[in-house]
Amino acid sequence: MKYQSQKVATAYFAAALGLFGIQVIGGLLAGWVYIQPNFLSELLPFNVIRMLHTNSLIVWLILGFFGAAYFLVPEEAERELHSPKLAYLQLAILVLGTLGVVVTYLFNLFEGNWLLGREGREFLEQPKWVKAGIVVAALIFLYNISMTILKGRKTAITNILVLGLWGLALLFLFSFYNPSNLSLDKQYWWYVVHLWVEGVWELIMASILAYLMLKLTGVDREVVEKWLYVIVAAALFSGILGTGHHYYWIGSPGYWQWIGSIFSSLEVIPFFAMMAFAFVMVWKGRREHPNKAALLWSLGCATLAFFGAGVWGFLHTLHGVNYYTHGTQITAAHGHLAFFGAYVALNLAIISYAAPMLRGRDPYNQVLNMVSFWLMSGGMVFMTFVLTFAGTIQTHLQRVLGENFMEVQSQLDLFYWMRFGSGFVFVIGAFLFIYSIAFPRKEVIETSIAAKAPAE
Image (cartoon, rainbow, N blue to C red; front, top):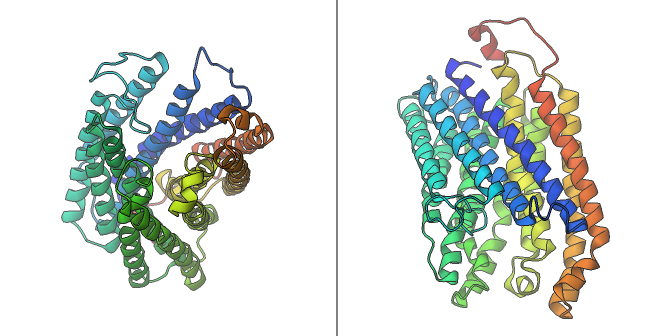
């Protein structure tokens, strides 16, 4: 670690991992409800469990992105963070908003209140006062990061990262617009959800992955930056109009079926490019970096993102296929592997790389960390295959033969048991990872920042 203000990232990573733990427990509870539908039905209904599971996912990923930015931007800009105090204020606002959301969801407070009550929009259920707090926190963050970059060295990594983060914040403003017309609502709702995960988040992913490849492999910056620009161009070209694959069946004009099918098919390209980029950088690399866990997570991120977001996304993106499969367990299979590969693994990679330096230690607990990678990745891949088979059966019985939804669900019990088992393995892996980061094992003699810098 070269700059003292990078320590701000420690608090963000800690908050992110805490929410990660809550998220995976929520997912395990939701998986059990598929097996025992009346489980906690009075105390904690399924819709609340699902909201906690999905919302905590989004929040902890964003906290991880913020932490990653606060860690890498000072190093890339070659100067201290503009204001560490603002960074801590931003985190306090986000934590307060998160607590407000959890209490509101659990106790169903202020139902129907336009300002204090939750909204009925998937992923965007947060009360308006929380959304306003998120905007304030985002503005603080963007000011802090932008001032740091403007006063320091500009690199392709920081330029792409800040572009993605500005896009993340600006697109969130569409969450305040909630028209009464359902088709119009869904059209703007996807401006947040799709253009986040298949647009600006890909820019964030590419920039953080490029930073990790630069540090872990020792490849020349010029080579990394060329790859980065190609990946970002492909992501924006395919991702923006690829939003059309969500417009097939919401009342939008028919031409969206062709636009969505063509451009969302091209969304495979940037994810394939990221996977190729990661492996080529390691192959060309001149550095034998001691942090093997961070390298494993980086390669795993690129690979699983390609299969989850790319291959499994393509499986049901063409409108002729999507007509039968949308909203089935095939969608769940794609969503789980895509989020885990592209963004969960990315955050765990940057945390694995940054944590030893933030704590002033050598890479530590690497065996536990790498075991957690294989447990989580294995559990998620198995879950993806299970849900894919379940979704295929569901599509045939329900969408083709026209059987009743609940009758079809009762025939998928075996798959839901297997999904729960794989989820249990995943949760073990998640807590092993948290333990490996929270309780470092190997102590080393503290050295000066100047002496440690070349070892990075």
